[in-house]
Image (cartoon, rainbow, N blue to C red):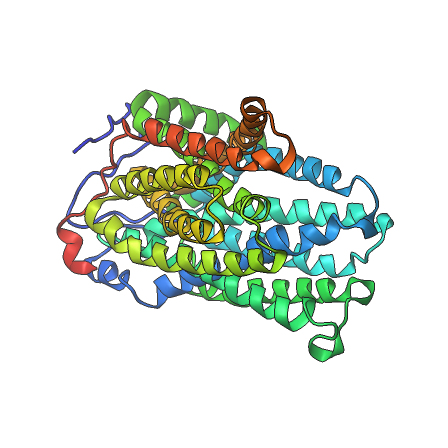
Length: 476
């Protein structure tokens, strides 16, 4: 089993296989006892942690994907709203890429991950609630855009600390199932909330409590529901996983410039002593962008190439998220049994085959897309979840927040790949076939397949981490 070389200093202390794994520094001031390890099996702390994923679906699925962004780019906000949305989100992505690693590093050093998870989550809740005041008027477009950008930034910062807690509440024997549970709950929570707001407020002419679409009230009240949803389902983990800062707390008061110096020093140490982790950060950034592209452009291809109506796209989206959520939970057991790398390789290979099938069978009708599209969805969640557990097994103890911050940064750095590949292959399709417009839209799937295949190729040489199954199997 590969063990990264340890540096001459103690900045990157590596945990190798041992009978009792050392918890993250934020988890406790000292090593875990066998009793503490047993309590990290599937009990309330794990469920409380997973409920944050369930609650976060309000921002991910409802606000960012299906409701508020669509509302902001409607005609009521004037021409060019979609372009402004793209630029504002790009700016938010840049800020996330710059500050996420430092945010995680400072939480590591202070030992207060739960505190920072709570602060950033509450800021997401505040941004979501503030969207209620964005009435359909061009004068309020920038208020909506800035709230959306702020929500994205604080959501990513919260996610860094949330992901860093994985080693705190899981053991090497069940980390795959724990991660899969959280990710699966996120998918399913998004479905539940989307169905509630769509059929309760947005779809009917007169919704719950007599709310209508006049003055955008149906969408604006939906934002309040999203804020409450996020708050309620975030409280369990915040109240359950309490911070117990260790000796590193006295070093927590570090200025921003010094934080970046420490970050660059740690990255340099990581490159010198554990390039395997660096290679995984690169590979995962590429294939995670391909996974995001599946959901981003799946509905576009369903409507433009396979003739789905708007209602059919929503129905497919609900089914797709349900399939992805259930599959992610089930594949967590395979992650623990076979290892996360094998799960990711299997998932990416299956998606490459299914994506190629969408291209080949583009004229076979809606049934072909239902079959192949759901195959894609079966594997997209497990690949995302196993990517998180793969990194969790690689991270040296006490560096979880910082490295998961780098995980967020690398993902943002290459987030242009899937959209660019999709567009390039649309142009290639037009050049090859001589057709224009939507007639060549199915070529775009080849761009997504290419990104997934590239990520798979980059992953193959990466060696699994040292936090693998041990004598702790009995604790799960």
